[in-house]
Length: 333
Ligand code: DAH
Image (cartoon, rainbow, N blue to C red):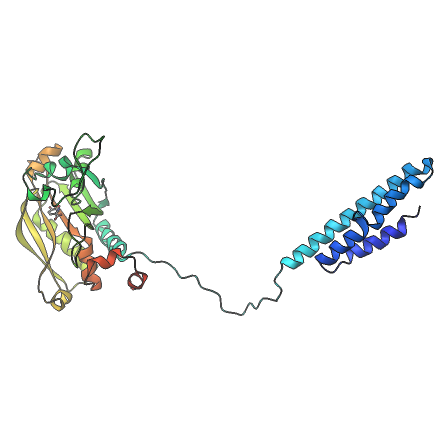
């Protein structure tokens, strides 16, 4: 039996297959059930008994060689067919993936935080699901205060809660939570989401954002408060803006003020002064609740709405635009 010429012919055909289809055909011709090599195996039986083992061995070796050649060529051809059919033009302009942006409220918040950091304030936070004690009682807000009405506050029905749970209506409870845990001095700001039962309109939304500030130390004055607020607002909205303090009432500060803000923008909006924040000197009753001695410690606090500031800064006339996630709006900032 002369296997060698047959094997060489088979190898040549397998190795020379131009594509995968040609390779499959060559495989059929030689190694398939009706292939020429398969036929050789069948002829073994006709050989004299003593020649059979040597011939069988030779055929098996050749077959193994053919199988190897087949799988090597298949690998080459598969790789070739996976490559691009046309050459790549590396001089073509690239396909850009557009970068995302921070939401305008996030940008304003980050800028405010950056200004306060320069003055040594640290960011603190607290839970959005609050209890009545931290949201109201600890802030000296009496049980019959209208803000505590179910008309104004979202109360939650949590079966396992020991206290009445609610969605915080302001970031002020975080003042109390921080003072409960930390001895003075305290210098914190608290950006966060708050909730009120308001119907949405151009200036109201049931959820919005506030920044709370709290500063406690020895001999802190209203002058410190005014200087701090002025510094931050000028950084945020420009040197030419003005602020003024107007007497007001909050149960957790005494004296209390509202901060009014004036700029070319507010004048364009048809108003000289626009109220933007509440503030005051921390009430002694609040200090007593957290175990600070009001004879030793003094401090101020403020709270303002982030949306308000963003609306002034970017000249936005409807608060609801912030929550609609319309990219045509968001792309502008
Ligand atoms: N919590 C007040 C509000 O939501 C804002 C405020 C007023 C915060 C006076 C304060 C403050 O810290 O001292 O309208």
